[in-house]
Image (cartoon, rainbow, N blue to C red; front, side):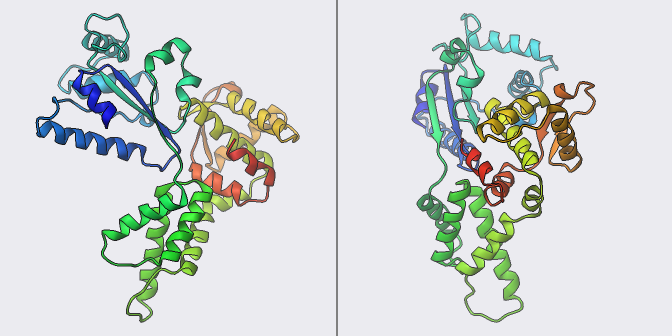
Length: 338
């Protein structure tokens, strides 16, 4: 809040990088901060500003961000190409400075970048460009057990009814913290537990039904052993390693897709770190085709060269992690947090 408040007060020229694992409230926090800043504007404690949100995961090409921002700023303007949009934005924001928004202090542009990768700027940008991005970092770590308990209890406080036993809440928090620390996952589990309790209450008589630790355990087993998780656990060691390699490449690059060749290189690295046999690339391409047919991933088969085909993950990251953590391949569990 303070960083954005100060940047708006001085008229822009700031870039803030918000990073952390999924489900830690990065986007929700930024939106809440913007909402509070707008209240400051209404109270005349801060100058007016415009806020535009762009979801990079919905774009097939990074250059489309220029068009998205220009269109958001000027909805009635004629359609332009990404190159034209970039030129228009540079002219609009630089105010006499050559091609360096948003770092110039007199630039009116403030960028808040949100990603799941902590060191994405270092991996993606050269040192020269990275220095322009700035050092304003806001890291979001995975939630701990006490934090997850607090989040769940705060949601329960709004209902006015104690439907979850404290032991059940702590049990859920411990399970989720041990897996991913994803608050959304914890809330989904609690929501499902209440649904199961309500369904059972329709066929049984009880004055004050409460989700117990036993019921919470049943729901967690049900959700952690979803069909998607069970399907992954039926895959071979090398198929699971390929999926993990794909996920690691995507997280490292911050992109939604990559090439088969990059996945195969990462696969080799993972196998070598485990001192495991490395399957030849041609056989790996065949396994990727099998995973594509089973809808674990999306493969651009229109490319004639297999290694240059584009590939993206279709299954949820949390399902893959759960499948590996609870699966029979112990060595793969060591690679998840590396």
